[in-house]
Length: 511
Ligand code: MSP
Image (tube, rainbow, N blue to C red):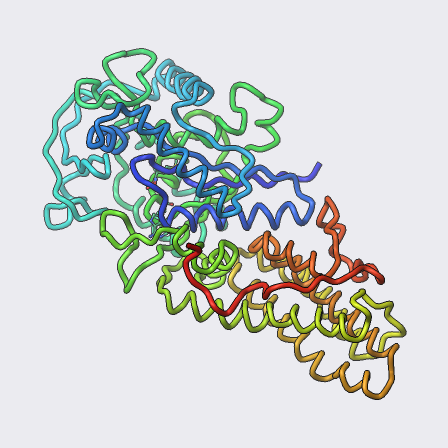
């Protein structure tokens, strides 16, 4: 049986509403999941919310509500945003759900029983916003090395996970599995981190200091550290300890999509936790870069957050998705600016893609009574176009496998350009004037079919707009989209449909 494609996003804190950074991770996972489905692979796409811990407790306190109410209110914002952004997740996990709490408790109990967890004393520098202890030498100018904010001195009894015992094993594992942590720069970063001695991981917080977490099954005075709880979501949702059949199919063929700021938690904490639990490692941990605004990371705390729905209101959801995937090289930072969005929108989408559809539909209405024409014998120029489109399918899937999504899109848009040039070269309007009706029919069929086929490769990125494009070409997509990947699916006689531009040049907020 073929290996299923299981892809996850980080689970998002419910302390605030989603911004463009959260949307990016989730849209990337969605695009990868949709490409996998297009290829007929069994796909499970998981996202969700991280609902315990200090950040959420503090956000709730600020608003004068209890943390569960805070979570219940915020989770709806995430769910609505993902729905609006055409995110097609198969499962949405919340860490306050009983299905997850049960697994966390079982893992903790098992690790405790086997001596992987012990009670110790922790003294260290604690960063409240990041919920992390740091050692003296981790600090940068006396501040948190991650967020730059001041840290506090704290001493307390806590439970520890024997993470240090796995350091040598982890270094060897990463060295032996070159495509485990991607891209290469992140892999090197983790190996660099592992050159320093690895400490044991403090995995509890005393209830007296932080009440909002999963209580330790063997000591009710403590709750579980939010990261230890959160990371386990990936196995909970795959059916760990509950549905062994499902779990053995999905695990370990999983791809964790994360931002580079949560690389250590995934590549060091999660990997060693899995090792201690006795589970195999995920297939890939893929860390993407940040969206920046004039060079600064976009974040709520920096006050430069871009709300994804605001951008979607102006340009449309699918154009926003296209921009995010086309503009960033997976793994590197990319700058978000209105000008860049506008440039991509007007150039790639309104001019190249939208205009091609518009021209084609107009010509079919004018020369072929508004119906997809019956093609005659193909000339060389026609078969070249057909071959080019068929080759594009394989090329695109190869690029997707290589996670070069921006290059895949560049290639697809290059083919859109070729269809435009094909029309210029074959000039059906001239053929029509010369009374060569059959040639006109063949050219317009080939151009329309090339556009239909090319658009399949854009469907994972712009599912709604591509659906509309097909509708205009009189094509009803088959329930298994994979069946539409061959040449010749457009049915002669199907009526084409005129309408407003697919991507109107004049854009603005919806209301
Ligand atoms: N709850 C943890 C993750 C637990 S996973 C077991 C968390 N949540 S978060 O709400 O802070 O969201 C984190 C995700 O959003 C990360 O992948 C992070 O990289 C991403 N982004 C947040 N700001 C970002 C940008 N400006 N640009 C791109 N992505 C960034 O961390």
